[in-house]
Amino acid sequence: MPQAKGRILVVDDDAAIRESLEAFLGFEGYQVESAVDGAGGLAALETKAYDLVLLDLMLPDRSGLEVLEQLRRRDLETPVAVLTAYGSIENAVQAIKLGANDFFTKPWNNDKLLLEIEKTIAGRRLERENTQLKRALKQRYNFSNIIGKSEVMLKVLDLVGQVAQSRSTVLLHGESGTGKELMAKGIHANSPRAERAFVAVNSGSLPSDLLESTLFGHLKGAFTSAIQTKKGYFEIADHGTIFLDEISTVSLETQAKLLRVIQEKEFVPLGGVETIKVDVRIVAATNLDLRKQVEEGRFREDLYYRLNVIQIDLPPLRDRREDIPVLVEHFFAKYCRENEKYLDENGRSRLRFAPEALRLLMDYHWPGNVRELENVVERAVVLATDLIVPLEALPDTLLAAAGIHVRRLLPVFERPPNASLFDLLDEFERRVIIQQLEKCNWSQTEAAESFRIPLSTLNQKIKRLNIEVKRKRDLAHANH
Image (cartoon, rainbow, N blue to C red):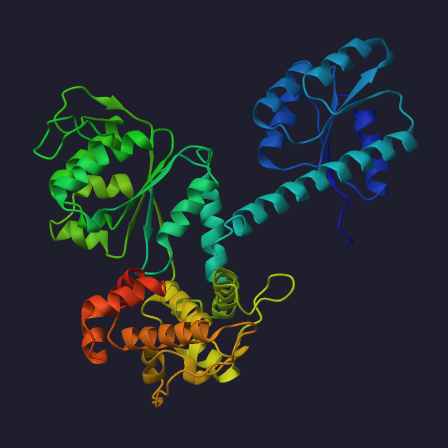
């Protein structure tokens, strides 16, 4: 059987009208159901979805206006057209005020009735499709810095899009480098709190006492180095979002204070006696199994359940390999712009990996996840000598994992237009230093010894050539 044009509910106590509408609209391709009174109509609407309700204003158990009012309390979307006699136009106008979409007088013109029904149902379907499309686009693509088209990543983005609108605490779980802070920023940016502060705290990088001062603030004189009163991050993030990274590293004492903030929405600064009220949404992150931490007595069970209202598991890069080419293209564009090289007239990157290099990237296990991939692409941009980045230009760690051993030669590059001899020497020196630092896992001391120069001399060159050693060293440590 052909699919019906739509499902219509007729609510009218007049059998002749019900039968007439069922026959007429059924012939036109609509599925028509009916109810003889208000109670029956409301019951039908509880169990099924309809594209249109034709509602009589004069019903035996209650008025049509009362039915309409009850319907609109829980359903603002289903179109309703009231059926009224010539003498009750005022009631029809009142029905429009209560949320009816249209009204028809008895007896009606079949052609006009059919035309209006078609317009109403088509308009409502278009609105619904637009709403669904906007929701899908917002959920999947409104996280501009979160790149991914794999099914597993789209499911994560769908979930994050729904969670962002709520006030609930979120726990992000994933390996190092999977983009937990980026996801936390996405949740904040797509929430009603987007215009307020987003504050990130790396719990693992701060000693316990300094972390408490950072989170809750302190008064002047609270401890030896407290020379002035300082606001804590919870106060700064009031009506916004606070991101607690590496939450598993927080001491049990600080965990108790975090629990109070979540439960009571208040805290006392170090050295203070008065409580400060705050409204802060918490997004926490961990790369460990917090449930196991609870079982081992390292994490409070009550705090675990407070934080784990909604858990979002971020997939490692090896489980979403189809995203690697998209991520590579994104990072090429980013770092070509930053380095102002290999850009076309529209500002897009012209760099590409050779096919065999891209295959190696697709096969690599990526222990450092997206962060490690970004580092590889940035390195390729900095050291690129041609538009096609060859296999040999990849870091030794990737090549060794694939069983490939390449004898490294000193970098050779074409002379850029208008480059002076000093520019060429600087570029050559920069590449040699970066290459050696990579071999030394970004240890400046070890690199200086291998170059047989004082450490101070190497540091001066690193500063002059604007080589970002600290960020690279942190990344290298995170990936091992």
